[in-house]
Figure 1 (cartoon, helix red, strand yellow):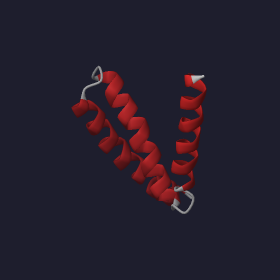
Figure 2: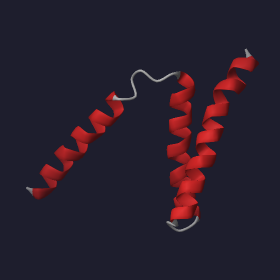
Figure 3: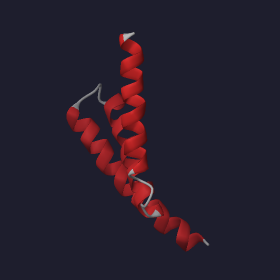
Figure 4: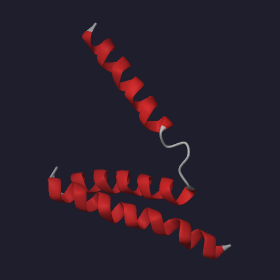
Length: 75
């Protein structure tokens, strides 16, 4: 029973967080996705180090932000 409550709360929080991203520009969405992926990659590569997680998120955010510029120049 406890796991059902935790799952329900997690789903509600996820829905609220994702709903807040609906009015972001493509560049902002790419930066957020890059930061999330970079944070996970940094955590995995450094064994869960806070420095690695934050560093990975920062680098991922910069790369995600630049992806939009690269794609717009390519067209």
